[in-house]
Image 1 (cartoon, one colour):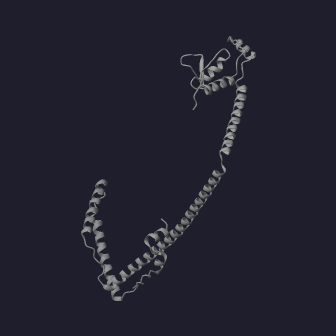
Image 2: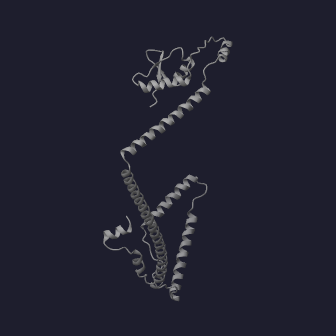
Image 3: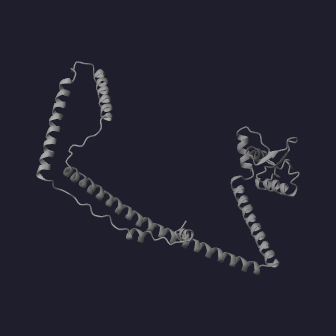
Length: 288
């Protein structure tokens, strides 16, 4: 949904940039960096007491450590038990302030607030930069989308006008002439295909000659050569014409004019099929 649609639905224009810019800046938080000498001395004394207590606890922990001769696995279990007990104790203890001096607490709180304020200002600047980037991206996408829609509308309008003009110009005579031209083109294309097929078959599948027959006789293969043999191209033409002329009975009878090797080749490579009841009849395979 674009920004214009959102404006129409809400009934008010969206001006988030002005709203963000008009938002008053948060008031500056005073930062107390210094305390009185008495407060500083009190805080130092409390820190020294806590440090002394920490050293005492550390010494007790060192003295309470078990001997190194124990099993490492038992040591790990004991440490885990001690840590779990310590965690449970810390969860039950209420946290206490290090110092109860109001002046120290005020200085620490002001410093924390100043840090938080700096972090929030950084987050605000990042959010504004991201908002500006998204706004620019949205504007570019809207312009791109609008341009694409205008281009589609223009192309569709031109296509409709073109089709309308063509429909007005076309007549029955022009349609007939166009159909005749297409038929003639198909016939020419068919003739070229047939000529190419005939050339390929004549080159790669010639009729047997006396030389080839003599070679077979040398190999002790008796082969009689029939002078009335038809070429492979003529066999394919007979099969195709029969299929087109009588599709209900597409079989042709193979006689002595069909050279057996060519017939077997057509049957073996799936170009022709033999009659299920008459082995001397073949037809063209259905390729559609």
